Amino acid sequence: LENGTSRAVKYALHAGHQLFSTLPEVAHTVQQGTIGRLMEELLLLASSEAGRSQAEDMLVLSRGTEELIMDVLSGADPNAVFTTLIRFLYEGACLSGGQEPPADLIANVLRCLMEMARRMPTYVGALRVDTLLYDAHLFLVAHPPSKYRGREFRPLRLLKTILNE
Image 1: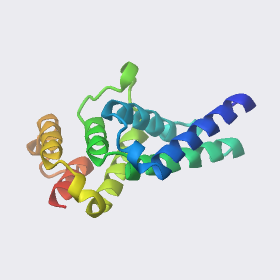
Image 2: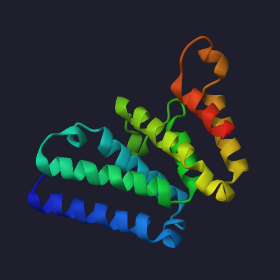
Image 3: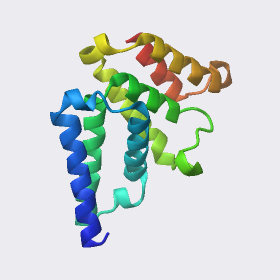
Image 4: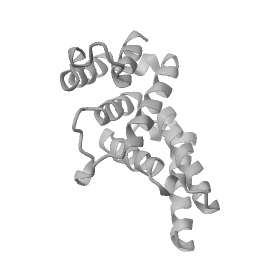
């Protein structure tokens, strides 16, 4: 990245970090569509070759991206985050702009869902169970368990874990 571009990205990551980590009342009002687009961009960046570069400036941006992902997971409305992450797992889910998701994207989405499941006791009172069940239903329609009988399918196993919590 050019110096000016790198600096702008660092400022944007810092601004996002400030919003989601220090202003919880504002972070909870961020619309689901905005959360979805932000998470898509952050997860794509974390999954890209540039996100795994060893160059010093890219390492700083990669760490900033990972921190902002964690800030969104802990600071945004949990209903919006769960809906967004589960929708990334639908079969044939197309990213905005018709992009094909990189292979690492699903692994990163699963890590985020695990983190949300781990933190569930802290926000269980704010969780809309009906919305979570609807998202689970849509996922199960796209991925019927019978299709994976006798095979390991991590997204399905993780969804069961979330629903059991």
